[in-house]
Length: 363
Image (cartoon, rainbow, N blue to C red; front, side, top):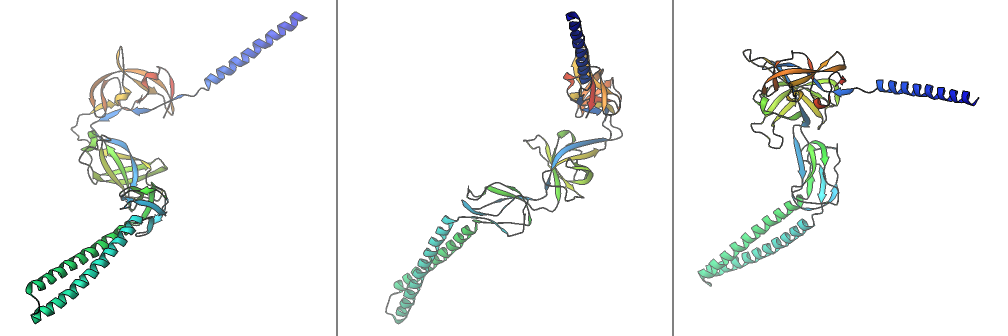
């Protein structure tokens, strides 16, 4: 009886193990396929289409700042706020500017009083001189004193005007109609002249800012038409036109800055959106034709150079290691002399982790 019971337990254990094993096999079968970036093999020096990434922005961006120093006492600026030209946006305490204005006003009053006194003295001296009761030198001295006092008064008036203007520097008004795109400070902060406190998008047109590499910049001209699509706006393509092509390289990005104007914009396009700009370059009919693949798609082992072909249709394929003979390195990648044909799909990233015969998901 005991032995029979033990046999049942053993059989149950083996059956349970079999079920667990089957479950593990099923789990392995459902293992997610590795996503792989790919590209089709194509020609160079013929008609080419290239896509570059950029960022949308209004065609006129103004950085708002005060022209004097002080503590912000009023701050009526919020991101996304629409403002009108000359609208008051922020104000400084203006303590020093107001004090300077009062001092200048006091000096103007003193200078005016001194000028009036000098004028009365000149009038008396003139009458005495005309009667022969005083000398010419006294009359000339009175004239000089009045002229000096008058000049001092005019100078004091100019100082008052300048100090009044300094007070106005403590008021920040919108230079144009637009929308606040960014805010950099808060109320009660101490700011300096020229310090950006907010950014105003005042342009009516929408443009794309992007950088192009040296290999294509000479094929790009002002007025060239392009296609633009946005990651945030699915299923819609926009038309664009190149309006600016920089003649010099930007040292920060090692590219040439280019501006593209959207010719059919909509309200859905917001400043700062990521954009893809597609340019179509036409080569000459006499240009040399050849197959080319990206440099990062070519690997090297003991037998020579290779690429990973992706076989199959749809979103799932099988990786096959394919030996190739490469030629010169062009601006578009390695020239392929043998081993590939146009239209084949090849992996363009992660070659060191791919295995011959591995099943992958295309992305």
